Picture 1 (tube, rainbow, N blue to C red):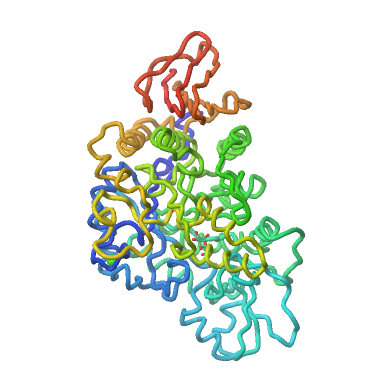
Picture 2: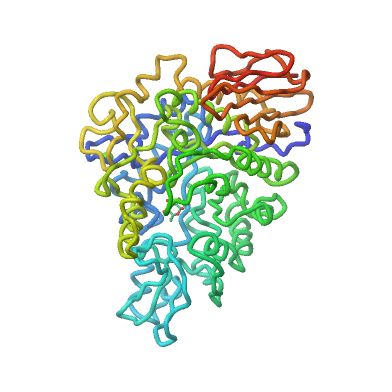
Length: 560
Ligand code: GLC
Ligand code: CA
């Protein structure tokens, strides 16, 4: 690949850092992270060398799904602060050269939104058509499953108007009716409102679900994939996104990224190719779905590296010519990266979390890095259902009980897969409540904070934190790591993930040992070099036959 042929963009060259505001820093002792808390930590965020911050929803919300249930799209959640705090925060980021991306949650609103209240007031209220209804006289609605519902159905009966409304997520998250042009207009207006304030983009929550099938086709298959595929293939998805681009996005220098359940290699180019004029990037779920069925099983081993490499390679190369990808291991909906893809035992936690960071920052595609991973935070692994806050875990626990299933088993599996594992507060230091709050934290702090915390890692040059800072610098200084062609080496090796990145005359080799034992990495002599750019060990062993990697060793070598 040639740099001069690349379509250069700041959102391709930047590293995204995701902040879950509820758990970042509390500033007023109520136990809940807030905007003033983030303001206090601006210098820390800048010190990481990240370029873009994505904030999970901070809008007015009754908080049933931690802000993914919005009751006013143009105001700030009381617990988080005020619009003045937001403006101060935005200015603070911009002053440090950091862009700010907000969450756009428009597949559904909260049931507390004014629109929904009016829609419920009578069948002929003008807001009725802002949502999807099934009048009871038509009989039972066609089967639709909900992701969160305690009883499983995505239809909730509304007694006063004798009709059912659709909610793919919780009952308190009714789906907005995008077929109604007024709804689209409202949403586009609201997007202009935030862009005019100066935000730099949107991460679009379950955006692939916005277009509904008028005829509600019957699913083939079971809860899970079949449902997601049908939900993600609404007939007018691309029409709406193109319209959004024309009406809003193309008027600003901003970035967009879809949360894309149901996206795959066959349909992704329709969403992100430049000539489609829809969105810039998407994140798929193929790699995180590997090996874990969140609801049913415990599978702590990430042991299928060959398949994993195949998935990651296919997604990295599909954007060689057109479109652009993302790289991520986790976010507020998934386990901590080190617990899931690495090894969080004392023997390997530090090296495996450095390895995972190395992967994200040397792959082709914009890295989305989740707060706390820079210090190698682990899953919380709560023992009791009472420790959980997340409605998904709680509702699934109740659903499992309702169905006569094994609720204890579900609890055990959520030590790995539960969403609250990644939502626990940031571990700033070893003082009470890890320096997150002076009050009672809204969610328990993970027990290992006296050992794993920011303060302890600041002064240690070998800490995951300082290693991450080196990585962001490395990516910034080497456009080959951004735009360079990706090529997988040793596809069948079950322990080593090796690849090259090539741009113009430069060749960079990345070697990652995804195992807790020493591994030999056979490579041709042309790929054996000693110009090490970063290494999570003090040395690197090589001879004519290749390299020998230590447990979880990650090393990046300039070959040419
Ligand atoms: C997305 C969010 C998740 C939320 C859901 C419903 O998947 O990331 O946290 O619960 O959408 O809005
Ligand atoms: Ca607070």
